[in-house]
Image 1: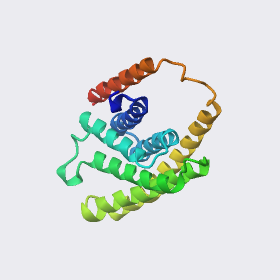
Image 2: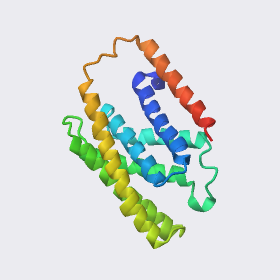
Image 3: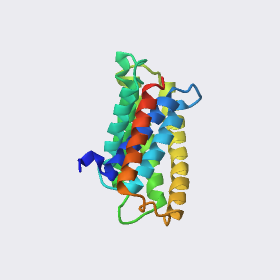
Image 4: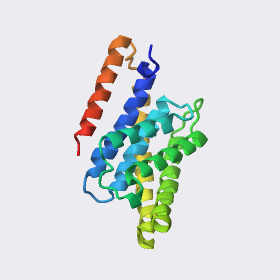
Length: 208
């Protein structure tokens, strides 16, 4: 079988596509603290994916897929050259941060909600801080007040919200683990996953 058609890879592609869709659609809604909301949803999706795919490197792979989704959706068309493809850059930093902290805190052998909470909180604070420093002192697009707001307000909101959502969803998943979806014919399940992935990419392409 072609490697990328294996079900595990289809699930990884689906996870990246969902994050890309979140970044594309929710990321273009005009609302307060939009960056915190979008990042909270992205971190939640990364936590769910990390639960199912705890291997080191999977979170970064998912983020790369999400970036390709965002580029495909033309979500970077409003960015000026000075902001260095702002959406994909922020998303890449978030993915790298989560990969690092998930690799530190989350274990394949021992499940703890606190490990996912720590991964979300550390990722949000550190990466929001790194992005704020980039925009303020390197690209010189922001002032100090915006830097502080981005780190201590938006970063905190993203970390707290993603932690709460991750725990709620993972708790629900753990309690419905007995439901057996494996009885579905593998070819049918792969076909369904493939159809959903294609539908998401098409939706992303026409979402702006």
